[in-house]
Amino acid sequence: MNQKIELIKQEIAKAVVGKEAVTEKVLTAILAGGHILLEDIPGVGKTTLALAFSRTMGLDFQRVQFTPDVVPSDITGFTMYEKENAAFRYRPGAVMCNFFLADEINRTSSKTQSALLEAMQEGKVTVDGQSHPLPDPFVVMATQNPLGTAGTQMLPEAQLDRFMIKLSMGYPDFEAQVNILKDREQKDPLDTVKNVVSREEVIRMRQEAREIYVDDKIYRYITALTEATRNHKYIRLGISPRGALALCSMAKAGAYIQGRDYVVPEDVQNVFADVCRHRIRLLPKAALAESSPEKVLTEILEEIHAPKLEGEAS
Image 1 (cartoon, helix red, strand yellow):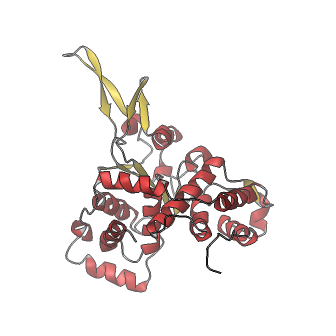
Image 2 (tube, one colour):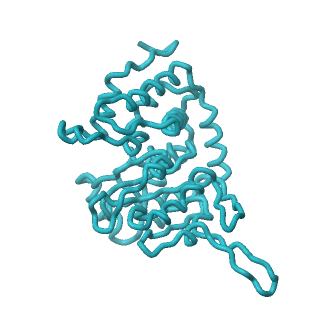
Image 3 (cartoon, helix red, strand yellow):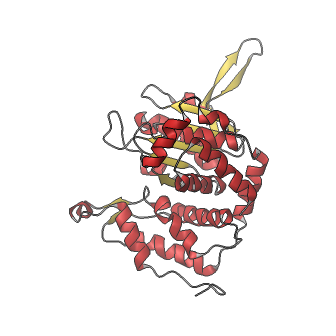
């Protein structure tokens, strides 16, 4: 395994206890060039996770608490007339950074949420007709409270589709909770997190992940899985081509993290639910059958035969 990858994981573990699987999925999404959506109750460490990643990877960090009074210009920036220069000057918004934490994104207005769309998809913002490129790399990690929590509203499908993965941290287990209490008795573990890679190294690792080899059988496997979501009896809205591309990118980054230069079916299977759960919409009859996005996606994985690659052990 890449030594830098292991160093990143070790540093994150200092601040985020007992969540190795979530940490690896977030790292996979960052190396795949994607954005991360975390849905959970408050207080389980979502902000700590974002801060730990930005520190260990040397990324400029900005955080916005999304409340109903946050406006689009807070995110994208604005132009202001300067009398001394007799010209308008762009004042950068919070999104002008490497790592942007959109905290409780589903508590603000749809107009403000949509201000992130161009930034997430194209790596730039347009203000008063002028485009301003965002720093490279650029990562959005958004948190949202479960639907039904006071003051929340559903994110539109177009915005959900821009997030490469959706994860949930969940409560820590018993021993992890004990360690959290002990670790924070005298100090903040975030203060011990060190920078172990530079922004340039993050860009290089992203490029190396993009170059991971994908066999035609894997492309067909990904296509079969995503097509199955479009034809399933309980699914109203299936996986888009953007979702299929995200699944492929995550599989490649997952193989890279495991130290391989090629993708195997397990790489696709390991991230299938994370990439797809927020992209599908179920029909009303799914609730009557006590089904859920996770159950449906598990069924699809079981139904679609994984390909056998040449040279793979039997």
